[in-house]
Image (cartoon, rainbow, N blue to C red; front, side):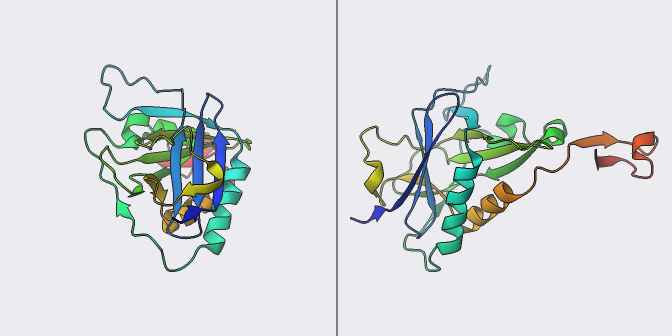
Length: 208
């Protein structure tokens, strides 16, 4: 059985880990392992729990994704299946990241829904990475739902390639790498032409 040669374990500040792996083939596999911060979505608790928090070191994830993009094979070894969101709202709605107020202060990279490998019965996996506008920080925020739990006894130095997993496709890996390399940008303000700070801009979004 083939194995995934490159594995990255990314601890999250709230407890638990996200595990990324690839063999320069079909994409970057993603699993959750022991995540502890479940986002409270009262009064409605969907079947697929939502987890959130902060990945401690963006640079390690950025370098891992970049290495995959730069060296991945052009002929994927495994056929990816597109996920289908069911029995729950899309991640952007559940997190409020699609609201203008949220986008004023944060930028987002949404992987929704993700592709899958192996048996998959639950709601499609989704992953959202966020960065604070205008601030250079070591970590990045994340929200995740529908990810498979990596078995506690899985040998990280030789994960089987056939293990069911959510997958960041090569195209989305390129987009994620660009997002992690990009500057944080400016905080956005919503102003009108009558606002002297934004004179001549008109209605809509402006940079501070």
